[in-house]
Length: 123
Image (cartoon, rainbow, N blue to C red; front, side, top):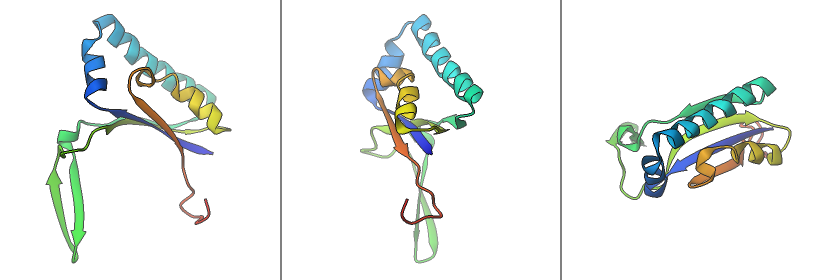
């Protein structure tokens, strides 16, 4: 089963990273790298990506066949999605265990959600 592990940031999360010592921040980056390495070794990693800041985002709206966009950041858009891991694990418990290794799980928001099969309406 596929699971999406989503890492969200808000002001508290940004402050936590900013307030870390260089050594603590480097340990956090190494924790992400180790997780990627371990998930790759077990064959569970599909993709892991960090996302650009919300001020680089575009909102897209199609109305009457016309596409309109708005530039970020967007008011009231906190927390925002900061990164993802798409994994394939035997169980949600396994995915949660891997998500618990993410540094933001200690001071931010990490969510694990099963991925529905787009080809099956009942999934």
